[in-house]
Image 1 (cartoon, rainbow, N blue to C red):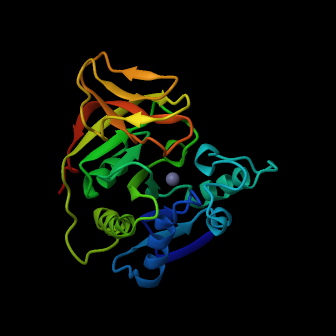
Image 2: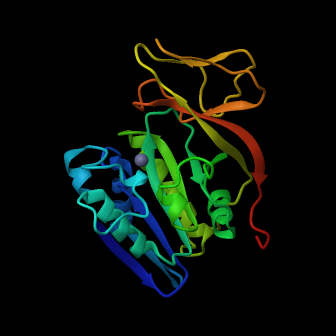
Image 3: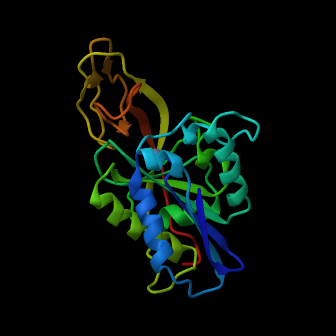
Length: 268
Ligand SMILES: [Zn+2]
């Protein structure tokens, strides 16, 4: 783990990269910020590269998935369980946290939260994304489900330069939204919330995915199939999240529904 702090006092915000070792874009973004970021206003920015061991070997994790291990276990034999505890203690009390991820799924970039707070609303509407996924009903062991005021952002495809460029832009937008950087005015926009409600399981054999992220699947159409499953959608308003043929071992993606629209914070 690598932690660098810039600035002093409050608010305190954090940008976390490298939760997954096979997603080096987040680490690149954080390292670039370590070299270039100047805090003009009162406040502290914590820049954190989480799973350096996994990044070194280029694998998602060494012993267990860090983003399924929160809040961690300091007495565990597994590296990531202990690391999760350390990450949580560093981020405890933060006013806002941004966690950088990439995926095998196609653009556009989007944000993810588990619990909506004023800080989360400020982050989400301040980021250059049109969609945010409410994953509160899904897993309870991710960073955004355990550390309050955390927003995760999917920057784009794993290993891509575009993901690094977007991650840098998104990080600066996050810092402007929370008043840490004022090189230019924050830009808040409305953001559509898609509630993720069901993981779509994968069986085996040749996988096919027919619809892209946030694209409504017409009733009666097949979202995805392989030798075991044919996932036909029987209800209106279903959109895929993290849709991917080969990105994940066990799922084709997640079914979601449009839930609400988030508006910029009042005082802006
Ligand atoms: Zn990730």
